[in-house]
Image (tube, rainbow, N blue to C red):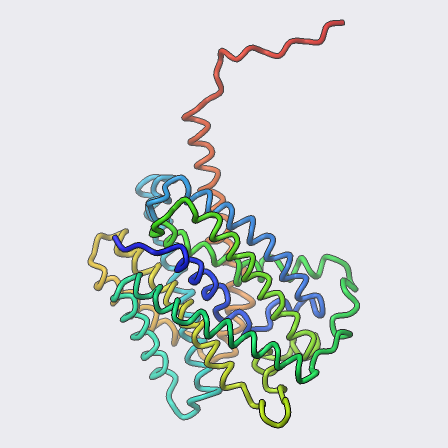
Length: 373
C-alpha cells in the first residue's frame, strides 16, 4: 500500500482548503461582516474536524468505506458509502466545470469549454493512475509557488493603497443573526466541511500518531488565511460590490497598479486559481475512484475510467455558468451537511454506543453514601 508523509498530508490540506475558495463571494449575505462569518464557520469546521479525526482514530489504517460498514453494517454501510462516493464525484464535477468556465472567460476565450474540461479530467485521471504518492508530490511542488504568489499579491494590494478600513465598519451592525445565517450552512459546507474527504486519505499516512496534530494545526493556518483573503476583498471592493461580483478576488487584483509596472495581474491570479482547482478536483476524483474500487473490488484503472467518464459527462448538465453558480452556492451547500455533518455525526454516535455496549458500567461499583444528618 502506498503511503503519504506527514508533510505531504499537510500540503494536501492547505491546497485543498484554498482550492477555489478565494474565487467566490462567499459569506456576502453578512455584508461587511462576511469575514466574521468566516471565523464562525471556521470554528464550526474545527469541531467537525475533531469529530472526523475521532472517527478515523477508531481504525487508523482503514478508509471511510470500512468505517461506514463498521458503524452501520455491511449492507447499510455499503449503501451509505455509495452515497458518499456520489457526493465526492459531484464535488469534483463542480470543480471541473469551474475550470472550464473560468478558462473560457479569462484565458482561452475561443477554445470550446469541453476541450478544456476534457484535458483537465484526463490530466487528473493520469495523476491518479500514477498513484497517490505521485499526486502528493505534485502538490508538494505547487505549495511554495502558491504561498509565495498569494503573499506577493497581498503586498501589491496594500502597496496600491486600495484598502479602505471604513468598508468593514460598522462591525455587527445588524447583530449576530445575519452572521450566523451566512456561516451556516453555506460557509461551513464550503470550504470547511469538505474536510470530510480526508477520511479517505488519513489512513494512508505513514505515521498515524501525528494525524490529529498535523491536521488541526494545518487547518487553523489555512482558516486564518481564508479569513484574511475574505477581509481583503471587503476592504478593497466593499460589501455592495462583492455581493454583485461573480469573481471578487479577480476584480480586486485587476485594480492593482504600482508604479505603472505591476498591473493587469488577473491572468496571474487565474493561473493560481487553476492550480488550487486542479488539486481539489483531483482529490475528490481520487476519493470517488478509490472508494468505488474498495466497494466493488474492481481494478483501480477501471474505477478511474468509470468515475472520470461520469464526472466529465455530468459537468455538461448545467446549462450555463450562472445556473452553475446558483446551484452550487444556493442549493448544493444546503444539502452538503448531510455528508459533512449528519452522516459523520451518526457514525460518531454509533461508535460511542458500541464502546458503551462493549464496556458497560461495572455493577460492583458501590453506590455513593448519603450524607449523615
